Length: 146
Image 1 (cartoon, rainbow, N blue to C red):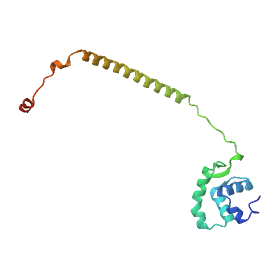
Image 2 (image 1 turned 180 degrees about the horizontal axis):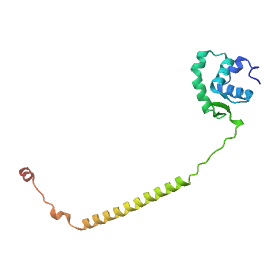
Image 3 (image 1 turned 135 degrees about the vertical axis):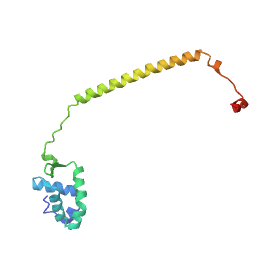
Image 4 (image 1 turned 120 degrees about the vertical axis):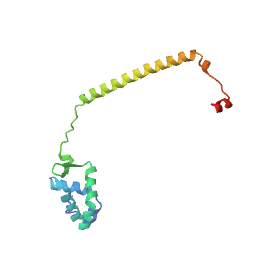
């Protein structure tokens, strides 16, 4: 059904993005945001102040709707009309860097574990000795005198 043949009441039931899809389909070429929204405002008989207050939200709705594609030159078109190339970056260099970093962390962990073993051995030796030999018990009076 053509937009021009639709009644205003029918158009008001549609969202701005649905109207945009219909406009782009009928127009068969990309259009910029302002032109599309002017057409919508004309169809719905919206005032210039409504245009000004709503165009930002309209732009946001276009950017989040998966049916539309923003082309170079700031023009919108239906995504169906375009082939989207997915470029996968070559992550070999990043993987090598990550592997080197992981190896360094593992070496640090092993070094830490070895140091902790040495500390444990020292504590074991200390436990074997009688540390209480050097302990002196003092009364409060002796502490006050010093």
